[in-house]
Image (cartoon, rainbow, N blue to C red; front, side, top):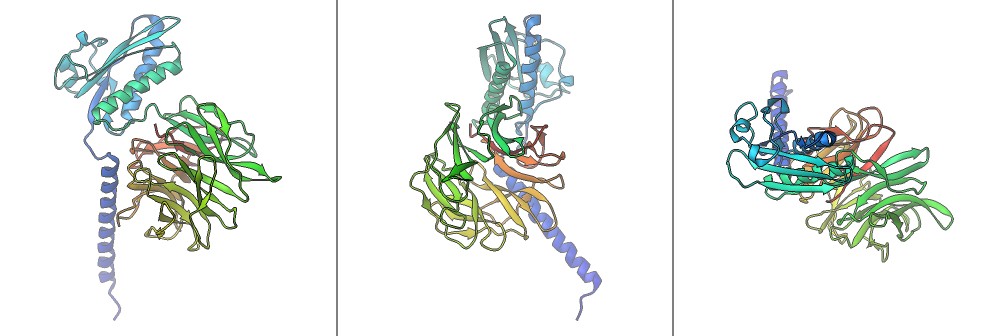
Amino acid sequence: MPYSRKYMRRLFFAAAILLAARSAAAQDRIRIATGLGETKQRVAVADFAPRADSAKSHSALFTQVVRDDLQYSGILEVPSPSFYPTQVTSVPAELKYSVWTDPPTNAHYVAFGNLTETPAEVAIEAWLYDVRTPTTQAVVGKVYRGAPNDGQVRRFAHQFADEIINKLSGGLPSIASTQIVFVRQMGPQWKELWEMDYDGANQRQLTSLKTISLTPRWSPDASRIAFTCFAPINGVVSAQICMYSLDTGKPVSFARFRGTNATPTWSPDGTQIIFSSSMTGAAELYVSDVNGGRPKRLTFSNGGNVSPVWNPKTGQSIAFVSDRGGYPQLYLMNSDGTSTTKLDLPDMGYVIDPAWSPNGQLLAFSWRRPSGNYDIYIMDAGSSQPPVEITRDQGRNERPSWAPDGRHIVFESTRTGTRQIWTMLADGSQPHELTASGHNESPNWSPK
């Protein structure tokens, strides 16, 4: 007997409620796992006082960078400076606790200080005080001295923000002093590695190989970058694994293999590299030492296997993409290649670019579902909860990479018309464009 339309509407409505409930549960799980679900403490950042006219520009720069870093931390809230009291607060003796705790500022903490500058040096005194628990002891108290230029002042501001975030988060990692490596299009067939501060400042070129470079990955100690490049082997140019040293500022040798060799990633202890290679035919996953020595095959399948990523927490499992089932899907296996399992997703489509969160619990990836574009999703690899979509209907979004604090993600997106580098909180909020000109792709966040 056919069901009535009324019954079908009720069934559809009930299914929609169930789906929404599961999605909400998954979003809550993601927020808890990333530390974004906590109540934010309010940290006011007073204007750092210049001790002379020569220090005005750098005092304003220092103040703004600290405010931006704290606001973008995901765990702190910076009240609008329009709410701040008019009294100057440049040293602890000038701090009036009540004017900062009263509405509309409602601060829990206040950061303040002063700058002195000469042609040879900038000196910055910086403090953080708990104004809800008045005491003569600063939560953070630092003096920074260095070259009087914008780059050094920005670095000092990032360091001060990191100190604050570290103290107020109970010792969790902070990211204001981290770097992002990415690929910039230099010509029709020419892409090089570039590096920038986590907020997009100080963009600078690293390599000058005059070839196509792709998929850079930091080593765990941030001293090297492994990446895909196109280099000759036996007179034939093909994709190979390349290495760049941040210590020497030069490429480092890595073994060359037949066929296509791509998407290298480091083991958590920094002693091995896993990569995709067609040296014996189909694209399979191999593991080697950091120089490419003693490659060992890990996968044996009827499809291509690419984009391996080691679980950074356990070192015991590897996520990767394989089309052994007919189209690219997400798989897990042990680090020795055993016990391969497919991660079930609630829909068909193409999966690319998996990335583990620092806690080894969450996987971010780009997924093109049958009805949509490539978007960034996050899933709990050990849960049956559906993945959470954190970008939607804003161009093509790919290549996610986690920040070491586990609260931020960098990715590439075409939402402004050209391929650029963006960051966002791990729940998809607070998107920031880091590059704006040319074509930029394949970002990877430094581990420290």
